[in-house]
Image (cartoon, rainbow, N blue to C red):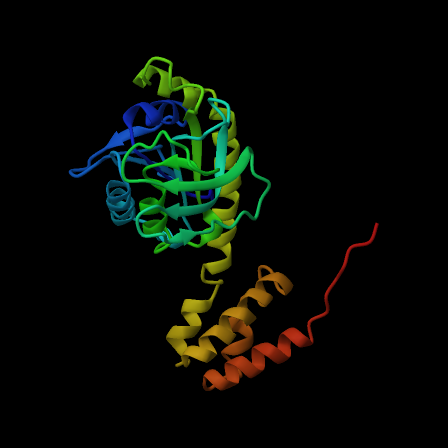
Length: 279
């Protein structure tokens, strides 16, 4: 099993180095350009510029993903401006604020970030005044507001690469080739971030997946919602304490109803010795 990561990227020139590095191929899609690797563990969608476009693209990518998106990590990559951060600096958003609605989001950093962290402000049009210490860009709020409908904040993140600052305004305008190079220079950080998100996605998959024998038990006895949660917890303990053993061999001879199942399984596990290896 491998963790899943969905990229949402505004521009083709931002996406090109990522598509090449992760060996993604274009997939059929009518509304947006969608790419994925062979096992679909990494997907990428090109949204176009703006918060609204990013929101729509994130929803579209979720809709075309055939697997459960609740354990998929989401990553928005793009360029942004800052008054004094050096060009090509990568930052991971620790706060996202929408300049129009004033709504804020706080991504949960449960790992050591592979780059600097900073606050990100999403604006409706390019802003080169840099009035505060935010990284200024145009997609993060739309992306994040959509992605949090599908996954937890621990696995939803935005990385912005500084493309302009107060010293660069007198230089020639930014070109697609320059944007491509900015992303290329940060591929090692992007790769490390993807690796961390894949681990978190995999852990979330393991945490939320059905334990062995759950469906068999549900088909044999009627459980309430509360009992189902109890059953899942007990079956996960069974997997740890009795690996390779069929729980039905214990339950079928003794249990007439769901209450018997919970009681029998709980008692059996309490009486199972925990063996510890000592060097």
